[in-house]
Length: 189
Ligand SMILES: Cc1cc2nc3c(=O)[nH]c(=O)nc-3n(C[C@H](O)[C@H](O)[C@H](O)COP(=O)(O)O)c2cc1C
Image (cartoon, rainbow, N blue to C red; front, side, top):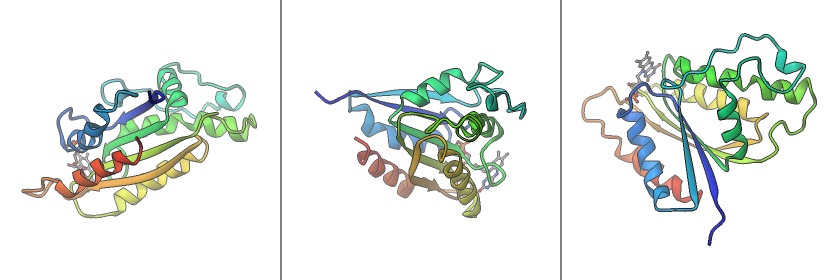
């Protein structure tokens, strides 16, 4: 019997069946055969969190003035693997997913204002799955840089970044990106 493992998915596409979902499914398919993996999904468009208002309440006491991030916080703390699956919008994450990222400021304040080290007790690895209409790699660089910086106070290490480029061009079926996603999945069993 293998020990239970938990995966949290942060899904940033407004499309339930778009390119991002397709790439995510390539990553998830091998996991579905692994019964010891429990998968929790969060869709930033379906269940949007409020944007951070920079009130700094989290600098005085662990937590947030808003309670709509609490379930993500709980799942994140319990997770062994974090998967961020998103399209690139304006060289970054779509606004609802960026709002989730901004709400992780509570961990930054926990670390540097409240001196809680580490702000999240358990370590996890993370995978970034991106789709983008163009071949302009800068969007993927920005997105992975943003995550890496946020992860420094989340006890989280970004291990893989898989990008399906040029989704807006005709006949882009993303075979290579999907193959890489399936291959990456095997590294986390
Ligand atoms: C508002 C908006 C902004 C976008 N910005 C970019 C961008 O900066 N760079 C890029 O390569 N593609 C950009 N795209 C294209 C999407 O990243 C691409 O179509 C993506 O594969 C869509 O994923 P989905 O099918 O899951 O919705 C943008 C699309 C939208 C709707």
